Length: 312
Image (cartoon, rainbow, N blue to C red; front, side, top):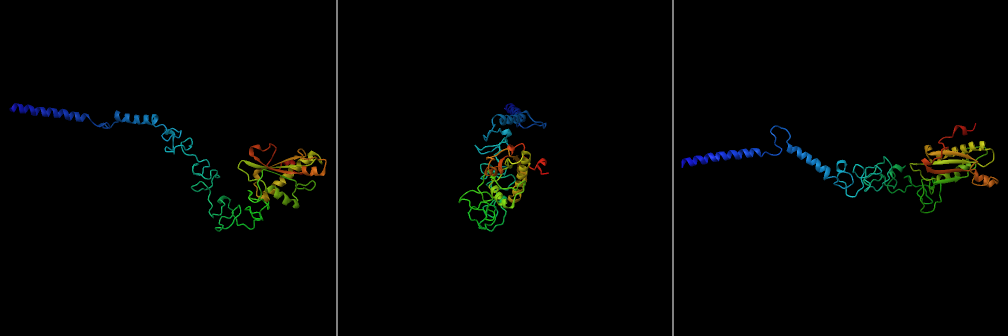
């Protein structure tokens, strides 16, 4: 009986040792007594890379692969750029889908709706407001200043309105005129002169005031013309000088920027009427103002009066 008990004890010790050895062999996958990465760990990293590469290609379905996407949770259906982020076309910090003023000028401060502010709440945005602290409720003109008489109710003070009888409801520019892209004026010049006569200045100012505001890619071209009296070698420089005088005038009187105005002279070469009558010749002695794209400026137009056209 004692021998049987002893054998049983030996068996228990033996199998316990086997069980303990098995437990030692079943170490965790990330266990490595030598401190080195195990094959199991390496396989996990490799598997993660495989998942990102092959299974999670474009989680937000914006057309940009996740590995290139800087904005991984873009709203479904929203247009994105090459980096997978929502578009902000005018670069004002407000996404296009939220931007209520999508054509804000560069550098202008905007609110959460993408629109420029109006600090004095007069209806004129800050960048165009020449009177930025107008008292609340004060009627103002198009540049944010208090109205001092506005006979035709177009939002332009009578003392600044070059077209004081604009029809009710008409859209006008800052000079109170319905904007156009082409103006022809037949102001009278003295013989052999290019300066603007005093009695012709109001006419020229009113005519040129109708020009619409320029966009960033536009300029004004002023072209001078004469009738056929005299030689073309005389008429051509004269037409250039008259065009240049008109440029100087609208820069001074209407605030146009000189670097956005080109001049040209054609002399007698482009008549619009017969030169055989006084009336026809008067029509041919004209100045034309035309708004055009910068890339359409004639090759012979200049910003300044050419030396050879200056009167000697």
